[in-house]
Image 1 (cartoon, rainbow, N blue to C red):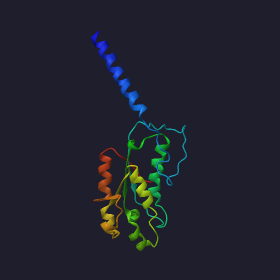
Image 2 (image 1 turned 180 degrees about the horizontal axis):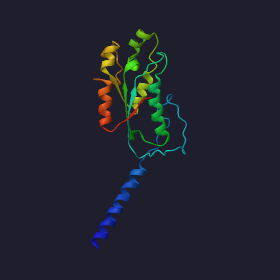
Image 3 (image 1 turned 180 degrees about the vertical axis):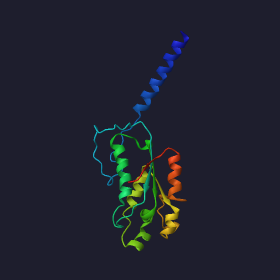
Image 4 (image 1 turned 120 degrees about the vertical axis):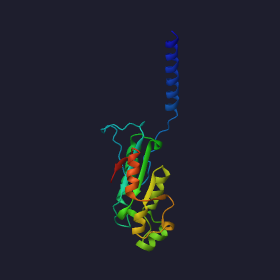
Length: 182
């Protein structure tokens, strides 16, 4: 008899807690990244995205492009954020890390230095700031910085320097992050 009462009490407490937790959940803003990563919501698409799961992704961004345009790999990160947001996944359930290296390395340069090198304002800085604001961690390969002769003072304050892209990608995959190479 006492065991049945204890079980009923435990179930009641769990239900009360889950009701309170779900009642406090705010609607997820969509798009989460305004102006980038265009996504149209498709509620009946498969597979179904579980908005209660935590998604851990490490993005490998290494392709360069037109210095006057937003890097396509960085825009793909925004698209991924917005796709999950369209399915109702909250920001705190997205554990996204971007590792920038190779020909993409210059996208992390602050505006003044970027203008000196490419004669245009850095079109990536606004997106870098927006990604950072929603919790996306941006990392740049220190070895690529050396190769591209980019000094520490030239790097956006929203980007952290790592030893190398290969070591960083391996470390995050060891921590069960899924690799995505846009």
